[in-house]
Image (cartoon, rainbow, N blue to C red; front, side, top):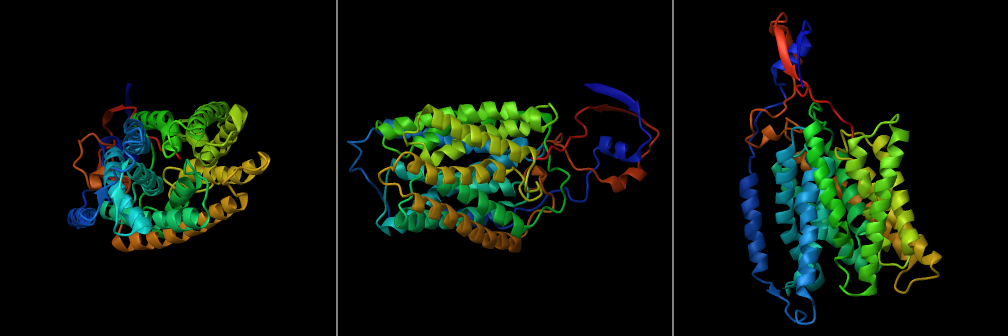
Amino acid sequence: IFAAQVSSDPIEVAKMSGALSASSGKSSTGAFGSLALGTQVLILGLLSKADYDTSAMKRLDSSSIYNFYVGVALMMFVGFGYLMTFLKSYGLGAVGFTMFITCLGVQWAVIVENLMVDGMAMKLDFMDLLNGNFAVAAVLISFGGLIGKTSPTQLLVLTLVELVCYCGNKVFFLTGLLDLADCGGTIIIHVFGAYFGLAACYTLGPAGNETLNGSSYNSDLFSLIGTVFLWLFWPSFVAGGLPAGTDGHGIALLNTVIALLASGVVTFGLMPFLSKNRLGTVPVQNATLAGGVSIGATANLPMGPFGAAAIGYLAGVISCVGFCNPLIESKYDTCGINNLHGMPGIFGGLVSVALPIMLGGVPGIKPSNQLIGLLGTLAFSCFSGAITGMLLQSIGSPTAAFNDASFWDCADDMPQPVDESAAPLLDTGIRTVYCCSAVEAKTPR
């Protein structure tokens, strides 16, 4: 929609002229290329010591496992990637860096977890690829808090360091010591990834310029594509690690779908009460998925449709309220990971403590271990994330935050920040023709 107006405001004229702020501009990727290639060489060396485990291939339905792998991989590449395209000038970084983190992280997680479990005698199968994608999900959750404020080199370091911490927490503490029940990764993945990322955000510090920390109409549409992919394939994420064809596997699929349905309806229904009878894109992009986060730790338990819907309902309430009234400012938590993964993850962890008691006991699940695992994961993720944030700070962040032009060659029509100091130099008596999208709105998350 176009409109013509005579502007006498020098700031408005500067906005319409597309003047850039001092924080915009191109930056060098520095040592990123060499570090990425060197890391892949290191991975090649470690993989030379590994082999495939073919002992169970005749007994397992490899095509079924591969289908679940594809679903989970689509969540990583398309779901997480496009969910984070809400930033109006960071679409390439959102999708591109998600792809890089996933490609690097799956390899690194497979190696690190197998080294912790079996030492150098690594035997890899499809489940290792699935577990590698599960591990990468934790890094991508953390990336949601840091997105737009980190360089490619910082993201490479984040991926390597966080996955070592994630695998250590999973292998030695949650699985080895506590035998935690968490088929969908509510505690192992979501709580760890959220609070590791938030702690790193605080020690790294906010961006120097927040001008582009906001969305546009088109970026919100692209983000909703990510939401739809995540919603559709979330049951694969929750049940993918369970043996196909078992009762627990089927129950997990059913419970996850019902929980997602409930959190979706609750999000739409609650928004008008929290946003002055208006609907907002941010809760729809995120809170509709909260049921999948919270159901993960108990998805394979026989809670029935009512139990699954109740968990999804409450998760949607927690997440929607969080996005409409965020506890953490967007300058620290860019994507709102506390509202989608953190608080619903804690809620789901508490459900895994209470539900086995309500069911009269579940074989193999100790409520006390569930609580210890939740609290221990919170403490370790915050500690290790804070240290990692300090490490990232020492590397140095990009000056032009939330801006693809920092490291990517972009088209000329990408939205740019405005340099208000340039406004007085412009002729303020001109007649300006502008588009309604020339000045992008900032949408808090």
